[in-house]
Amino acid sequence: MSATVLVICPHADDGALFCGGLITRFAQAGWRVVLVRVTDDRTDAIDLSYDETIRVNTQQFNDAARLMGAETLELGYVTDCLGDVSRVELRECFIRLFRQYRPYAVVSFDPYAAYEPNLDHVVVSQAVEEAYWTATFDKHHPEHLAEGLAPHSVCERWYYARQLPKINCVVDIAPVLDIKIAAAAAHVEMIRNTLNQMRLQLRTAGQSVAALDAAIDSGDVQDFVRLWLERRGRLWGDAYGLAFAEVYRVDRFGAWEDYFQREAVPIPGAEPPVPFHLPLSMIEHGARLLP
Ligand SMILES: [Zn+2]
Image (tube, rainbow, N blue to C red; front, side, top):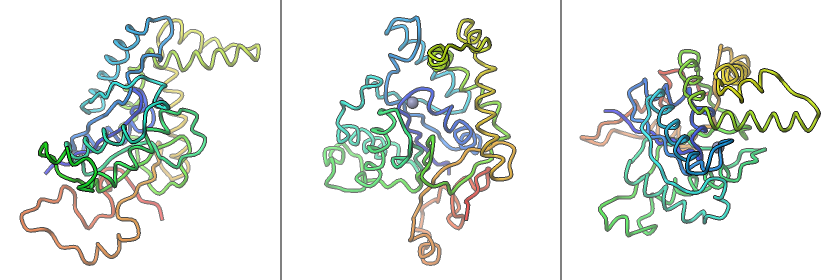
């Protein structure tokens, strides 16, 4: 039986950049991977109108997802304005997705991450964290139940961040690094805008980097994306004895894990989507829990 993982990202490029290796490994292991984009990325391009920015970023989001083997789902919120959206409203969106897709795992920004300057990232991470447990309550959004949906509990939460509060899982991404780089580089306009932020900061310091200017002006961002993601992947790989790695904070049953491993028995007729005796899904596909 194949399992489903929901990867919830505020923006189109978050999936490939932060967890493109894990997404690809889930897909290659036969999982149904649904990449949820919360906003429309209307601000994230240079030299384009708002409408053109939305159109191009949506197309490049779909291209990147296809490369990684994921489906896409759009929530359509206005980018860089989630600070004005109620977390309770967003939480309802995620509760509904959990009840509709009934995922085994969810992948999201870590709500307890440090040094996160993007308010969209913070708001989405907090709403997902609350949706995780409120989706199990029959008294949260009973209108969903009237529509035929049922309470659901996600089994595993995989958190990524610029700086995780704790790392307890490392994923070997060497076999899929080229796919991750291709998926990230598919976001040409968003990458150009990211590089332009660096160019403007350098300019304030009275500096320029020719290769950076060339990538922005030509739109050929592949080399910069490779430089960026190989550096980041190698940094974590070096720390954990791998060539290239991504790191996560994962949570399953927490302090109940040992007790459940001893006491749990299969429900008659149920098909476990992953072997229960393993401490984590994906352990046979490059993931390793750290002591
Ligand atoms: Zn983002």
